[in-house]
Length: 483
Ligand SMILES: Cc1cc2nc3c(=O)[nH]c(=O)nc-3n(C[C@H](O)[C@H](O)[C@H](O)COP(=O)(O)OP(=O)(O)OC[C@H]3O[C@@H](n4cnc5c(N)ncnc54)[C@H](O)[C@@H]3O)c2cc1C
Image (cartoon, rainbow, N blue to C red; front, side, top):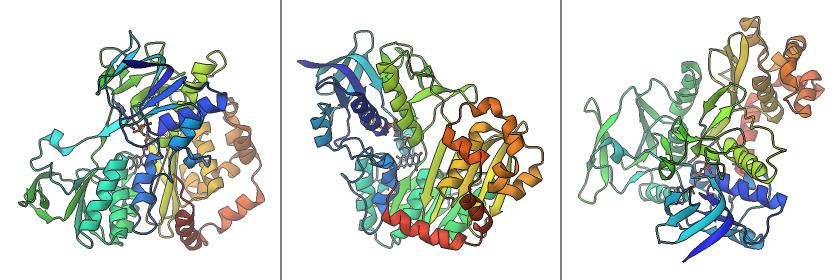
């Protein structure tokens, strides 16, 4: 017994939800498309798991954050899929794929066939068992990748109210979970091997700001070391975390965020792989022309940098999904994927965005003290990356444009002084980057060529109103959940 579809999306996460929306926009016939997911729930905005869902009060819960609510459009509940004639095969784990025969085999033994396959299998968390840590299967050790993990994390936190939590890992999952645990009145210690948090993105100066910010809220940091064992009780609950130097940290619960691995195993030996992901071209097409891949699982050409990368960003999941759908529907019309890396995070009242590439020399601007600061990365004389804490929509848009245009920088000290005002003081310099201008949308051009008076007022008044902005951001973040 089996089912046959024109198009199958394997994986039911962010990319799958956005791909479904794109198909619907183009008009898809009833019964043509099937989404297969081992999760029991329809695609949702995964970043909500570490943000709205962990709030102590008025926490977000499904169905509130099904895709594509993150871009302000209709929530795609199971009813939405039904109404659009899209088959949603939930709770369905695919255990084998044959790309030559165009078949998928489910764990329950069903064979599903397709004409075109979109791989959207995302990534899985690295578990401590994989590192041979004994006691890693204790009941109060939590991870955070999917809705089930999130429900467990909330439950375990509730069970040890006011207790001690150890967070293993200093990346964005660790940082966002630590903040959420503090908000839930837990006493939090973070342990990670790097010299500072968010080591893949932050410089030591940027990291120092966030570590200080967290310390003021009670978080302790133990850096430059790893945990080696757990001490558990008779109920199979962790009671302490043991570090490499034998130091013992008491724990009522543990949250682990030590990285992810793309889910490629079904395709090993069948499709070309690169950088740990499934290799695709600018149309998100794999080495098999009937198979496309999107989101966290793909290694794709980044036009801007002339190399191949795998990015674990929700924005890329959304955009690559739309790209694949357009390439499937109108292969002749679609241009190659031209993605500007973008990443964001929010914790406590802090909120930052990053655009571009964090290579070369990093120059800070603004005021760390006032929580309104940013950074530019300059590589071979050009701005290639931009980071901003506490920005507004226009400011973030200007940084995105900068990172895309990569204007030359003559005076780095001046750049640091000008900060957010850099594009307007350097109109001529920006114009020199004109070959790149054609690739920028007209709205961004307008913004660069003609600074609006409201923007200039913001630049001048920005620092003095930083406190007010922070308070507003906190209120706004609570009122209007953005994922
Ligand atoms: C807690 C959390 C917070 C995040 N916050 C941010 C943020 O602030 N900013 C940001 O840019 N990014 C953030 N991300 C990253 C972002 O969510 C991912 O980049 C995005 O979800 C990737 O989308 P995807 O569709 O490729 O993969 P996923 O959303 O992971 O979806 C993959 C789906 O495939 C399913 N699947 C896999 N294998 C199989 C199989 N064999 N059979 C059936 N189904 C299968 C999985 O169960 C899952 O449903 C966050 C991620 C997490 C976990």
